[in-house]
Image 1 (spheres, rainbow, N blue to C red):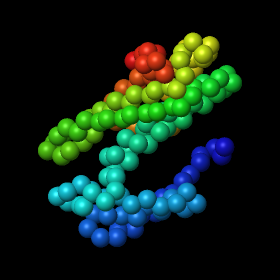
Image 2 (cartoon, helix red, strand yellow):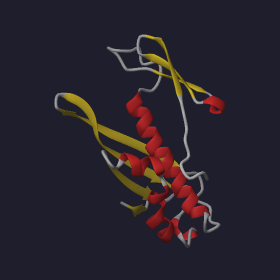
Image 3 (cartoon, rainbow, N blue to C red):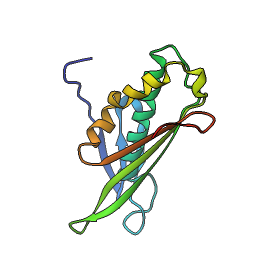
Image 4 (cartoon, one colour):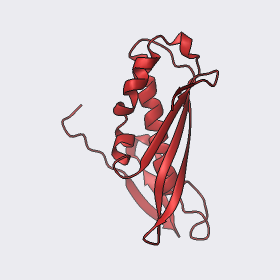
Length: 148
């Protein structure tokens, strides 16, 4: 990886608050604000941020587990956030991310080690945490809480 990797994303206003987001080779996405501002024709920036945090954490967890040649199974993530007023403006105060592994903990002998390091692999979450509290929990396929 380069010393300072760079990226760019291009946005074009289509109408109202609806934008086309161009990720280049990765395709495009339509975003929009919910009513009454927009028409809710796509996710808004707050939801995109939440999806980015959850996706990065899930990928980082899979990477940490796969480093030990183990299979996390079908990983799923759920993220929720809380909006609060700060100086009379809406801000994202915190996010809760729940990661669910597709396999039981006993089938992952190095899971404990993976859990101690995976969050540090997540570029997005570690960047966002500088301004937003992000809480993470991990459950195995049986629902057993492995990290809280």
